[in-house]
Length: 257
Image 1 (spheres, rainbow, N blue to C red):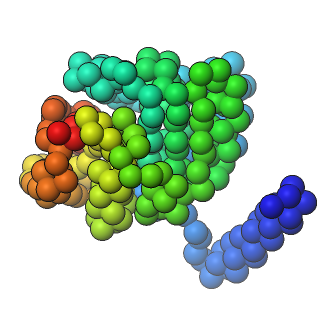
Image 2: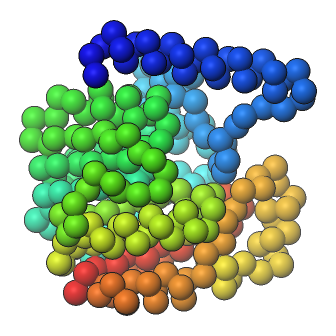
């Protein structure tokens, strides 16, 4: 598809969205992304630039919760301790968003190929542009369908990871992604994911969420994820908690046996 045709379809898409926004606004409705308050790419990039900061540095600076600062680096450290980054060549990330984890994985592990499945066009285009000049890492920004890793072949990835995505996607959509992550992992490969475990979501945690403006948490049974992993020949190498939202997420690091 040449540039003129792409431009034509972009114009149609933008025009359609403006029309829908107008009529829905007239009726008192608006289309918003489900889940967490997703950062607008244009606004965030402009704000970071105005402050002379990198995107991920800027995003972290905006949080008021001191517990959440340094969260990414703590997760990366745990992954490193398990050996996730040893001999890493091919990576696939689901929903990289601003590229917070992508930035660090490329810096630490220097993979040869990094595939990203991001449904937000603004962030996908930003990441593709931002990392297009990486000398030793080919970044593939794939047009994600929100369900599958359709352009990644079976058993081709050393690492598949996803952060702060399964906390808001519908349960079956999460499980579809989990099955896909297992499918594309090599022998000896790792799958890293976080989720809000249903087993520990007690009244105290529920009350904290109910008292907040955030109504998006999706709960996933840890037992179910472990059963799915075992069936596909994966074992848990590490499990830990990290602060998130009004409570915490549970991280599981799986390895294909």
